[in-house]
Length: 272
Image 1 (tube, rainbow, N blue to C red):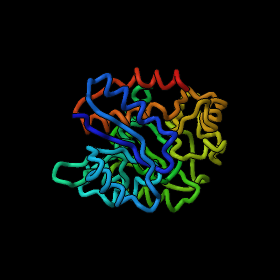
Image 2: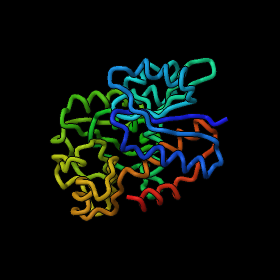
Image 3: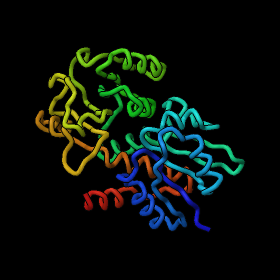
């Protein structure tokens, strides 16, 4: 019997997840069906119940704007999900409970590895203090960087996040004007660059050895990637690989099979 999965969000039409999971299923010979379902903004709890009990789904991925709300509704949370304060993957267990996980951070870190970007003993700048930033801090700190500085327009949000994760190592937070010195790895966790905006940060954060990563992706370079390239950094990477890697981790949680991500990334790039 075909097992059913879906990605939910609002809006959801643009999602590449059905293509990605169809590729994983074909590659790993898994009999699954994966669709995109738009859920009403004010009906997440009842929608989850319907997906589980009526449509008989085995699990779902969750995207904007439901990640934090789904976190509150899950019966069980993985350690990384508990720290992230948000989930992007749900498993509908046989006993009727919902287990939540967050694969965004591991997706980011695996893609950084794909591009040979080293984190150990490096200074990392994380731009943004929203859900996307919070979800990746714990996985990033597992690589033992020298320092992680969270920079945000509202300094208090960055400071709160830094305090929340201070037990993991050297985590600092502050406003954009508090950023000091240059960084080895600079990660943009805001969606601003999709609107053509770049963070109000000094170009002194860059050196020609810096690696810059934008969690967002588009058909052409994002504004952040364009800006980084102008500073002659050593490497720029967009978030398409993170999307595929977090999906692969979710697929593994559901199916206990680990797909090859590189061929799927290449197909996505070719179709962009």
